[in-house]
Length: 479
Image (tube, rainbow, N blue to C red; front, side):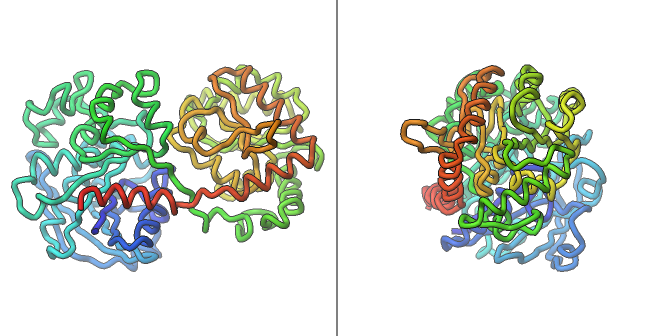
């Protein structure tokens, strides 16, 4: 089958988060199973020149965006065995600063979504996709466009759609006038059963309502978003489509997250040399953050966007207690000012025990994964999570709230069976988190037990292999 992944970002070309990692890895895994795979994404002005200079111009498009007729060029690049199509329009995509959050995001991604469909009509019929696999709100209108504007055209009639929800919190919500002004949809589609939600146009809901199949990035997150607490207002729409919604766990790119070859860390190591390798990285990490250099103290890492979702209010609720524990902490991330302030204040109150870096540095992040003993992820919700997978790959035991993908990937330590790949707490409660951290510290000082857990953690399989097979089975439902 011919599968097109339509997404707003993909590693290594453009990345703001986990979506890019998925689009950078899943297509290759599915291609390895014998499918014909392509990726469609915008050509951002900030894509590295080493990729741009290899792109091949294919053709121009005139893309309808409401009453406008906008220009697009389609370029092609073969990279690591995958065909990438780039939609080029400098007005929409050659911008400095953030990728999302512009005043005209509704227009930018309506244009991109429509262009991805328009280009199909200019390709040889042997290249027309069987499945369009769309990702998150930025491409939520692709299935709606296909159904409403293109189903009368023979070349499009056999195309089926899959829509993956990576994070339901971000929905692409825009004023009602977007309906006709940008999408060219009649008001019969602006209903509770259609793409209207709370009186606004909702691109995420468009994907949920109009796609043939829906996936989430972990089985537990699939079940959680069916309920009001996690459903972000769209739980009723998801329950209506429940038979078509399945959770498929994200995998990890093992090639770029491998402690035995990672040039970003102080010393590489594998399963046989993990003790010595982590000791060198731990000392480097302690020195980098101005912590007391000690091998015998537990060091807990935290790498994340500093936003409400990531459990910073739990950390703030017991910040003094954390500072008084017999362990060290390092924080890396940026985000909302109030959460950055929490990290700043903790660092100032506990010098030598808590270190922080506000911002993002990929090399420093990998040093934290390699040099920490444990990794803290007390998320309010977590669709899948990537950091816990990386930390386990590097022999760093995650301490997580048991929600979404964290529940599906981290097996809490059982002191009776001595099995586990980390530590977990169930309720979103600061003192429950604190008690779990204290438990992990006690286990850390039982070196034989801890070393056995590190071994179990590093041998867990979080490759894309099984997930790719599940996606392939899903695509073949349409065959």
